[in-house]
Length: 132
Image 1 (cartoon, rainbow, N blue to C red):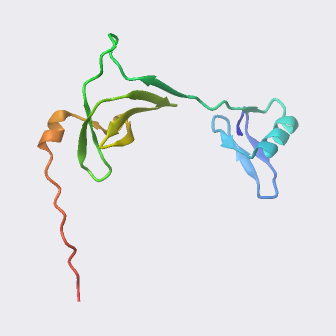
Image 2 (cartoon, helix red, strand yellow):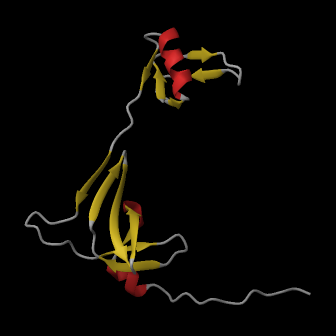
Image 3 (spheres, rainbow, N blue to C red):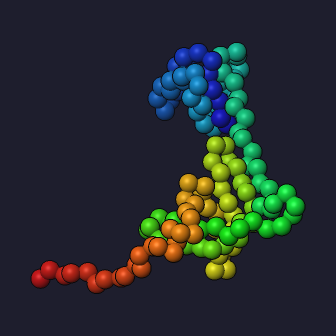
């Protein structure tokens, strides 16, 4: 259970002391959190977890959006793929696409332009140099 304090609180536990600071939620086991809520009534509260919001990716007239391109962890830019869904998880935004038969979730900061996709250098695999 995610809890947050309204003032600095120190919780004495067998596993060690835990300091709660206002504005910094802490995830505790449910039973421990319930006991704390009873003992420190008014000083701690339950923090509601944000829901993941998902909606279809379509233009207002219902037509599909333009294909997107994105950068992978190894620096390659992949695409094109048509956006299927937009997702929001707290402050993060994601786009769901099907690419090469697999569903992928692409974070908004990984999006790249078609120009970047076309201008990227080809990745060449090289053999490692072995020292003797």
